[in-house]
Image 1 (cartoon, rainbow, N blue to C red):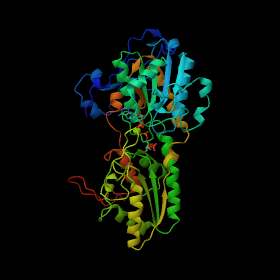
Image 2: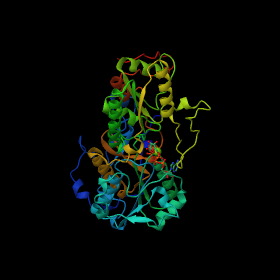
Image 3: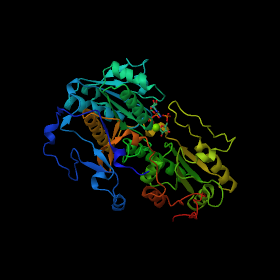
Image 4: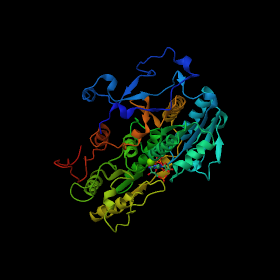
Length: 460
Ligand SMILES: Nc1ncnc2c1ncn2[C@@H]1O[C@H](COP(=O)(O)OP(=O)(O)O)[C@@H](O)[C@H]1O
Ligand SMILES: O=P(O)(O)OC[C@H]1O[C@](O)(COP(=O)(O)O)[C@@H](O)[C@@H]1O
Ligand SMILES: [Mg+2]
């Protein structure tokens, strides 16, 4: 999809007329390698050849509005009521974002009131809208020391108009939605309903997901803490497998449609022999299939370590009658429920190795929620705080229907329409997957040929 600069334009509620309390800090600021001045823009693409592909003047090359404080604000801060809601699956750092928002809004902008809606978007429905919590700097002082979200979260669909009624009832001027792809879609629906009613409410997204599947952000917050935690489970599986006769260490990690956690955790642990992700299909049988490769590994090395993203190999479960199949059921938010690829692999690997006289010792680990409930690490803590600052500035400047993100190390405003326009996935032709192949030495694919290509039989 080719993007035009207009696709990257951000909606403004109106002219900024109030002096920002941060304006003094900005008087001498200019764009430098370490700062993007107000009005300057951050390029979408970053190679010479990609830039050369645009036959337009520099100001028309696709670029994002830079995030950061403005000299003037749209809202009069002293009259602002802000709302915060956290939705979807947990992710390390959510509390850090809440804390950063509250501190920035209360301490610098001195906003009138900050309300937390509880238990996700459900907290904005008529039934629960009065169950809010008043957020103050004192209240959030220590919340970054805990994982999860102090506001609670949920999945499930809500009526946008009913949610807008809640915002109106509480007099909310700016709403911060900390959520994943679902949350960003919900924020878009809310913003559309707000606009349809001619209301003056800004909706800001702070993209949250351990899957790192949201586009136009270098990495989502909490992802690094989550894969660091996953790394420890891979190391445990390696130790167990290496110490067992014909050991098979199998670690299943979260990652519905994107294999970033599996790829990064495997690179970090640097002990995996095979990484399986949703983006790359694999065959089990045949001379180039996964089972033959596992056998080869166990014969040569005595054990094998496999990192499996939960969304990998879903096509293998499509055969009717397979017990591991989960049908096409969805969760309350409409996310597809995945089939149990881990069960299929355990069974087929055990059967295969047993049949060739290498009866395995299966060491299976499913860390599941353990990797996403951890406290944010130091890097994510800084990242969350800076995203929160950027979101607060964007809101006060009257930006709406927009998410804050870090793009090529600069903080930018990304229209929600773009945030929900595609899914970020591991590119089989990109350098991340190349690093995985270099590290594991696994073949580029297991028995599944791309059109016109010969599948290489192994890397090392
Ligand atoms: N397509 C959609 N349109 C409107 N709201 C949505 C949509 N998908 C999800 N939501 C809402 O967003 C919330 C969070 O979505 P979910 O998929 O559970 O988590 P995440 O935001 O982490 O992806 C849910 O409460 C759901 O109601
Ligand atoms: O919390 P649930 O409903 O069990 O969902 C688990 C899923 O949530 C995730 O952690 C991602 O969730 P989000 O889309 O909410 O960020 C996936 O990795 C995992 O498949
Ligand atoms: Mg999601």
